[in-house]
Image (tube, rainbow, N blue to C red; front, side, top):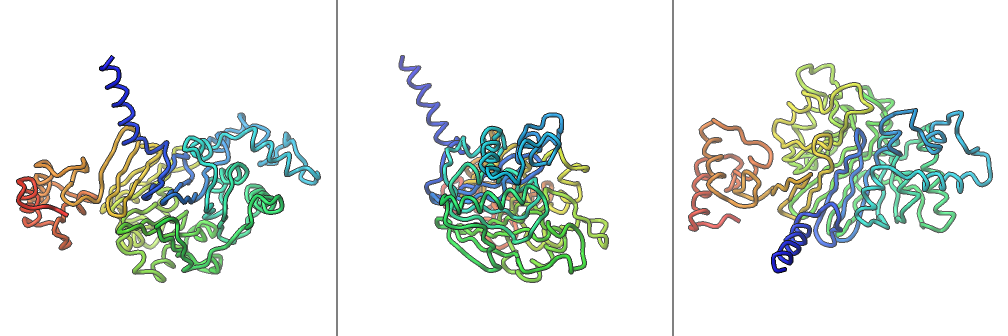
Length: 413
């Protein structure tokens, strides 16, 4: 009997310590990079307040791009011959909402339901492409919210049209007091104790700027979030042109970002003047992320992402992809960050803990020694943690401090 009690207690202890997927962050910061395939959906909790950046695909059928499995909802979205509703009908929105409710199998709403989400303070559509906007139709229909931000671009697709119709209808029905809002460059607001800053310029007309890529991608909302000592950047799908505008406008705010959401799912974003690198090369060098998160999948793309050029250009960073790891959850107390995916749990931004196991051991100072001897290459979190004295480089002084910490003659802060 006692053995059974011990087993039950151990189970609940493990759930409490590691069950990040199923719990709210009533204090501290928690960022869920949700696995939605080749789309984007990022759910942020900060001291009890919440923000959702993009919503992935509308449904599993849209995610797989399999027209043979379309439900009446997808037929309606794609205006197939089988579309069940007429938009001119007086009860169209009511009937469309019923379709959304009946065929609600988007990745993002399934994930948020597991978290127990009922309300979202800020819903953000970075840009109106279906792999970012689609799931937000389900979100707008299902949950209450206080604000919906978008980049102000009109887009001639049914996804965007229905998104706007649902938001406007929620205002008419009294479900929310505000309709679509366009945040302006340099706007800031608080999400719990986090400071959120809008970096993108929504007045910029990218169709008139020479450069690469899709105008809508380059018009993505770009958001910086600061929580204590740590900084996070969310980039939508900006390509070379949008990245250059940010570098020009915000060289300081783009420098030394701790965690970067890689733009455009890890595509190369070709800059045809620099063949040996991806088009993101200058942007990555400006940001210098310690951790890089890439939301990507195997469907709806003609190339393997992230591309080798992107991975090579992120040689300074630890890379985490939803394609390989599933949903990745970062928890932050303002200084340290913990990283969880599948059954893995990694400690980050803990000085001296180079291997991320949560403690400073001889294994860590061995890695420092190998870095100094040039028999091992530290990058990302390992490199940050190995610079114990904070002088910007890894030297024998750091090795000595790690050994002294282990011997109990020095305390790493």
